Length: 135
Length: 135
DNA sequence: ATGTATGCAAAACATTTGCACCTGG
DNA sequence: CCAGGTGCAAATGTTTTGCATACAT
Image (cartoon, helix red, strand yellow):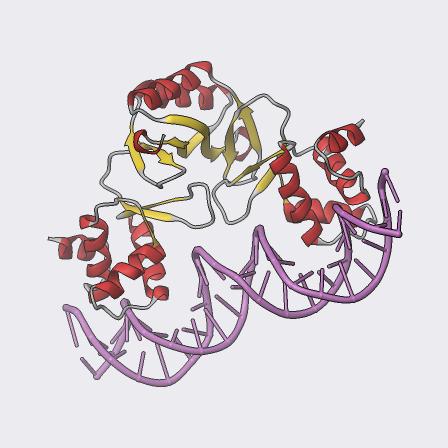
């Protein structure tokens, strides 16, 4: 039950918050822009403002419930943060997103950072191209 | 001589274009935002508009002279494209950018893409954290 | 000369914020 | 009841664009 998630991070359980969580949780696409989420809300007949969607997403991000990504292009996309880190293959034609993890890449990144005296806080690896169906 | 670069890609040799190229070429920071480039221009006494800086950078990007990066944050940064692909370590405190290449990571990316039936056109790997001097 | 480039101001975007009103606990 | 949440409209910051003028060849 999502309500617990919200309470756990100190946010009141409100209708817009529940709705946004549910959309992120149940949508076919796991990676959605604020505007896409807003449209989903309007389609379900919920009269939630776009500003609220942004506010809620930002709060969720701060609370660690959601991850924000800046893929190529001008807007951010959001996905539910279910703990497991992963990187992304992004189709430049249909916008499909495929997640992957490669332990060797992860390890090499740590090595590179250590080699440069760098203390990693985060990283993002995005591979752009054409997915199988768009070639 | 930079003039040749411009002619080669079919752009007239104009003062703003030359200046922007020179700044990208000679600046201590290789990665600059449009606004930083604009400020450099104003400081050198050149009265170039910010819009022109954006136009010129976009043309350069299209021509393959410049690469645009969207690091975390809200604005793009540009660097001279000197052919050799590389990834970036970005200091979240001082904004320093360190370039690196790791052949193993490059190879694993190709493997992952192949495995998913994905045809790569581009990729970006950014590691965020604190550089040696900011820890 | 003449097609391109430029500067300026205004537009376009995604995102954020101020404020009066509403709502959850 | 009352702190916190929301909607709306207006502000923001970056990037783009329309248009009259200026420049490169």
